[in-house]
Amino acid sequence: MEFGTLRDFVMSRYQQPPTSAPERQAGSQKTQIRELLMFATYTANAMIFVDEQNFRHPVISLKKVLLTSQCCCKLYDIYPHDMAIKKIEEVGKKTNPPLGWMAPETIFLHQYSLASDVWSYSTLLWELFSLGNSMQRS
Image 1 (cartoon, rainbow, N blue to C red):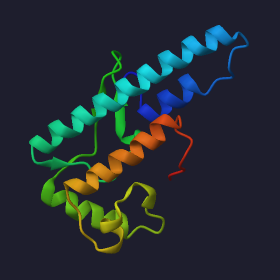
Image 2 (cartoon, rainbow, N blue to C red):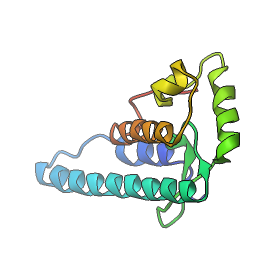
Image 3 (cartoon, rainbow, N blue to C red):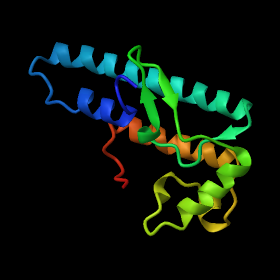
Image 4 (cartoon, rainbow, N blue to C red):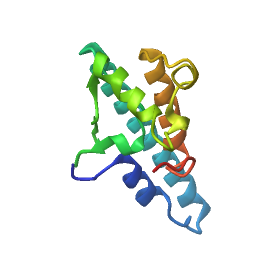
């Protein structure tokens, strides 16, 4: 995709030193919030579409969302529901699994469902609105 991952885009676009003029800061903050809300909405709509096709996106993060030149969000690394369960089991067996993105029931009870994807989406929102800085992931 033209703009790479959403994480790279957000970090490069918004992690800049603030301008000195307070009126410019207020305007740019409103624009930034609007754009971040747009990305959050596009990603939620993509997840709804994926679910309607009986697919899942285990452990979604900003790195798993690509941006087109029109700033549309495209998910990758999606799986049919039964394969998503196997994928989440593989992820859980890693030396350093991305626990911050995994739902508690997935970590502790080894259960995975649509609700687990909702948890991952909520951590994506945290990551998005902290401009990609809140969590480190390998």
